[in-house]
Length: 330
Image (cartoon, rainbow, N blue to C red; front, top):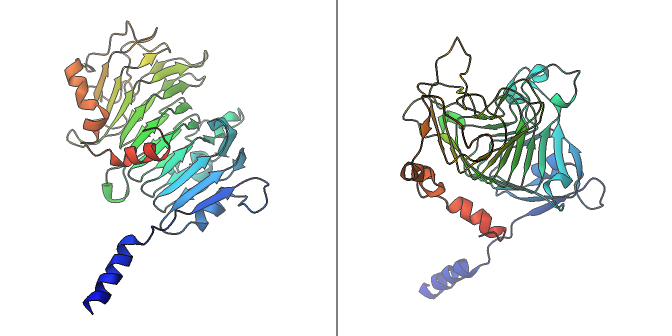
């Protein structure tokens, strides 16, 4: 009996792990899914990877399961485009407008574009129109283009106020009003934020609700650019009283408003005194001689260490390392 128990235990230890499911999507290749959502729906509860062939996929996508990876098979992120054109004006809610909405944990996006093209049509009234919405935890977005106009990227807490964490690397995010917004712990490495032509551009609208809440947007080694037709450009405005945004070692190529930051609704709100806006080593024509508004923090090298990747996530970066190792980048 003891020998039988030992053999069963040994088999359990040495049994090979079940292979991750990999599904393929193409606009026309036989034997593949022709819809990204159909492939998402076909994944088991354990998740899996969906490889997407070059093409333009006009779909409204929803991912509620965990451990799902969407991976573009093109030579660059521009080769695979997931696009839709909903807006708050058409759905009745900003948060229902997203082209891709992710509520599951451990979501990975690599080498593709997610776009909301509502604002591309000049006949459309201006409206919030999200490209990517994420409320899950441990999300890793790499080599991606996130394209939109107002409210392009939403990163926020999950159900019950659970904190969400997200890591972005080598991404391009475009928009104008509040185009990176929400209340989460989000870290951006080597990303370009691009303001499209508009009378106002705010790169961020973070919404931390309380001074002791553990959320912020951190931008490290990023570039801030803008179309020639973009005016009244600011690093951001506080969506909630205790918004927290930090820019480190960032090149500012766009001309910023005096002070760098703007009030949520000038003359009606007074959130800049309670928000935590900070910067260290802003370079480029728009950052080198910028005098930050009086309530913003110009960080010393020691103070900036608080916002390093490892300290920002309290030493828990295994979920980032695992994804970078899987891609051969670490």
